[in-house]
Image (cartoon, rainbow, N blue to C red; front, side):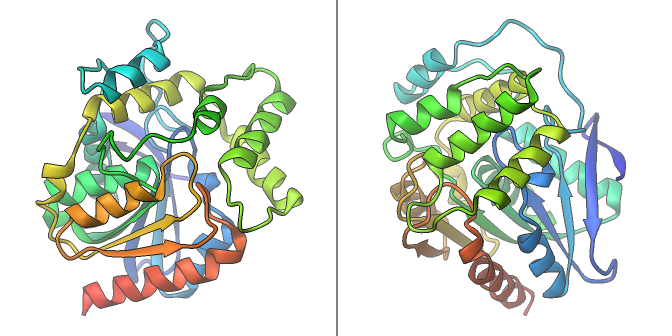
Length: 296
């Protein structure tokens, strides 16, 4: 698995598919490494004819971890963000977007389709707004515009997200992730216990890093409302959101699509804040059609 220098950091990445095929970069969400992408999702994009690039965000997985300072008060930071007050953070989403441009430079890729989930969707939005020459299209899945009026999840989902198991206890961390997906996952699609445990187990083996996750969450909160920036996006944009998302309500997806010129919104009935296996073929097909239309 390659380790590259990007934006002054070392990032771990993985490349799959024909090197001559159209590149598509996958940007994962809060605290989750590249192995959190379901195999069927990645394999589906490769089978559709893309060169798939996935990577660990900074402060996650095998990518570089930043120096650890004092533990942030995340509930306080969330409260300040909701009140539109300043939130201090070691970095913001624009820094993470520059990580992606640095990754593209390191891999010799001039332009790429970008697909992001949750925080990754927000990074994709910032990337398209600030570096339009690097983006062929974007797909923003279960993300938001940073508008606090529509971005507040259900209390139970927020509590589950902020819960911190002992990172040294392998089984406790797996149980935490399984429980988290039980709260934020898709009510309309029953999870396969075996698949879910396998996904959580390989995620934990890749490295569970609560301090990095906290800094990534601060980056989202400190970046704040990006609606004005979204208006600058001209790349073809597909917004996908579940109607039953308890962490980022479907209103957040609607708001995102409303502020990106020409964006197409796809709402998936019964989907929560995950990528349910039953919907993987449809989501891959929608992304494939979107990317091919952008190339045409």
